[in-house]
Length: 338
View (tube, helix red, strand yellow):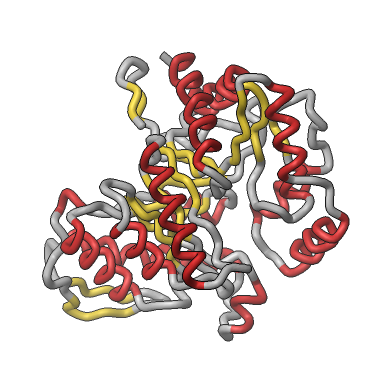
């Protein structure tokens, strides 16, 4: 999505449905549907999750590319799962096959139990050090200026080249979590967009100078604010089991953003303000929500834009109409920014 009048280039990403509780064939159709809806309503791309409970994100991204014209998969990449050469090879292969840019969401790993199961005891901040080396190798391979020789604390390669090379105009966008100091250091070191789970725009600080920044946010907007809140509370009802699951997840996670959101949730508004954390508190989704009329939600989005956030990763769309409503809120935000 581009708004020339305001001089803003804003990229909006939806999120791919998760594979849990669906058989393969019906899940594949859900992915295709969500991808086509996202493309129709102006999304640049779609985030594809990667963890021990999901299908392989590269295979899911292949499905997205086959069934859309321009949508860019934002592929979650976890260093524990594959060598950096394989990531670069996949990005180059997709570029060659489809003539389309992809994005890479570099994941240090926030689920400690997943990492323990894979025999990876690396502490939080060191995982970002590893991620920095990992991404630097991928970048240099895809830039293709010369064979890559790299000797770091975690990875070593010697005279490694990417053939056939990736066309320069298809070099991937790179995202990384920016909720912790370690994540921000990594973003600067690898030239990535730092993405965070934001506070309300009246509490959120500006991104660091010279840093490309984005936020992960859900949106439920309608022409009438009361209708939006009715939809929100019906979709994300209070759930004691979910609250207990959330509390358990907090005990086994060393994720900085998870702790930050949990602290914010203790003071979450019940409807007077559009910033809403009840879905997070009840373990129904992993991001804050903005809820209200197109104009009210648009005002909050415009505040994030004024702070300097240009990339927005939305929650999983339950149906196509939700993206239509979200687009109306963004149109209002961009008009305000202009």
